[in-house]
Amino acid sequence: MAGTASMMTDETTGTDVPYAMTMRALVPAVSASTTVYVTPFSEMAAAAMGAGNMDADKMRQAMAAVQTLMTGMGIDLTVAPMIDLKNNGTDSAMLGRQANMVQQLTRVMMAARNSAALKDANDISCNATGTTTSQQVACAVGAMAAVMTGVTTSDPTRTAAMMAALTSQNVTSAYMPVMKADGTLTMQTANMTSSQSMQSAMQGAGMPTTAAANSVNIMMQGMR
Image 1 (cartoon, one colour):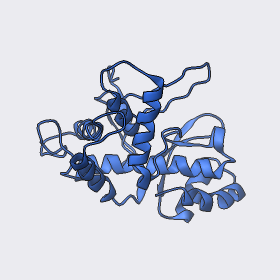
Image 2: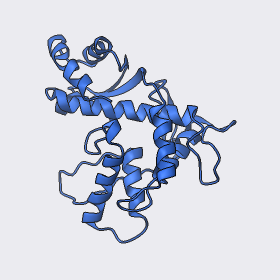
Image 3: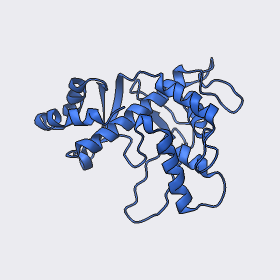
Image 4: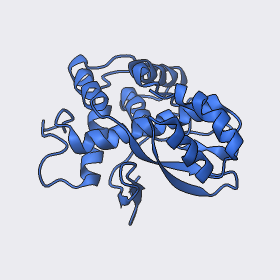
């Protein structure tokens, strides 16, 4: 939830902009080690639940429905929305899924700014003249959430508009949040379509040169 002076990083510019929305994630089961990632895609699953009674099985169905809907983009709600070298530095496949999540979040940011297909509840385009970046993103997240009409159902017209808005964005240069091996967070810019650029970014974040060279091709295979 937005608090006083809350900020978020714009993956397209690397700059911080005001955070002015609420996003949620579903937690079907809680333990001492439960980890949940909050993204526009998790908000879609939360929206699918509506305001009814929370039910673990329905939560899992909603999460699966969103993942199925976003299959073409390789969305996996269980992966970190950053590159996590601290915990997954030796797991190239996981790093690839995480890199893909960053890529898709960059698409959301780009679509919020560039596409007239994402609209608010009043049918006004999210990128209408005079709107700020934070307003555009909040509107886009709301438009994505409105796609879901139930735990396992979605609105075909809104789905088509959302997918068109997202897939029309060509993600090249992006600022990637990277959790370094020492636990600190850094932002690395890279051309996400270039294995050489990605390798340079991973090395810049502290991954050893040989490990980066061996891992990046596998990572790139996990990106859509």
